[in-house]
Image (cartoon, rainbow, N blue to C red; front, side, top):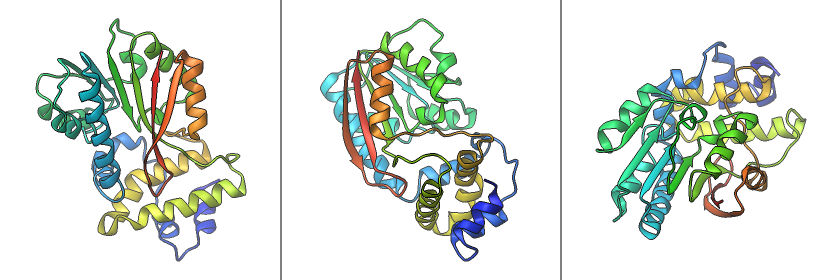
Length: 261
């Protein structure tokens, strides 16, 4: 499906329809637009979502007191920085991994003593290291499932505990009328949360992701229902997997998956 066809489905008077009509293709990776990503991640429903997420992570640092922490896809630190600030326990070794140099530069001065790696998860895990606690917050959805399976297998043998924050997306046949209608309705809710930043967020972040999903071109997002995430973790070698609700969100309910080998 093209942007024009999706705009027609959304309707010309809808926020999504207007943004799609204005959208020019070929914008490249969403990581080339860090300003749009920052506006998205620090606004709308993400404010409450990341407040809850940081609280949950801080509680786990304090209860488990890990000797080494790995954050895969830390972004600009919106989850890990406040989690570390709230926690009484600071892991002696912290590794922060992020493919975007601009986002990694944002987090660098706010976690003194950490090690910073501009890398994809799969390339980073080619090194020989292990961690007591690994987290990845809304990042593994950006890795193709076939590649992600290798990432999860590598983690299963090298971390004592893995905590993932992801979304429990509804289950549809991709490209079906029901799936497309659901995407339109959910994106309408999301764009509406951003007020004056709506076009920046839509043009620079949300629409590249949406069009990648519906067209299959330059796709950057592969999400699943919670049960499928759990299945992937078990297939990778994690034997104990739990799913907990984290927060309501315009896209889908956010969940925490905790897995141990």
